[in-house]
Length: 186
Image (cartoon, rainbow, N blue to C red; front, top):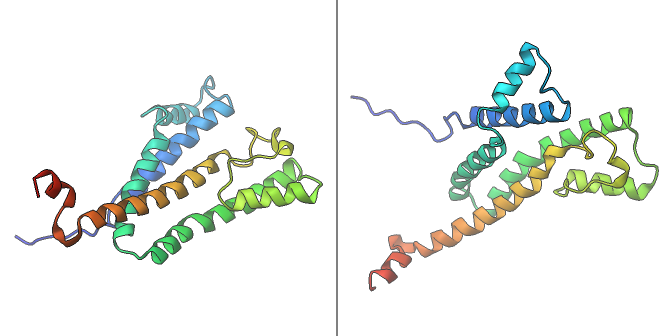
């Protein structure tokens, strides 16, 4: 019988993350657009998807992202790891910023002052998306893009995961698990 090897990258995690993202998106659409009582096929489908595991889409998304971060840590230097994570997060974030800004400008209007515009650009293009200026409180759900709070959480996770993994690896140098060795009387 032939041994078949499957590469780690050949999996269905991207599909599961997409499904979790749709679950979150549908749940927010139903809540913010008050679609719960609407009776049509699309809304019923959205309600069913959002209720598969109610309120757990974000948790599923983060759990899968965390699981997939470990091989990246194992196979990269700190510099390579940072470059990969930057390339994974920021191009999409900047694209979302451009789209959000165009929509806000067209439908709601941008602030008149340079200070407010500068704060908006800095917070929305880095990792401070949880900040929303007072001028934007009446837009949508009260923020430029409510889902982007996850960026700061994701960056924190990537930093903590790298440090924690490398620290645990340090304890296992030479193939000897130092923690188990200590408790075994070594």
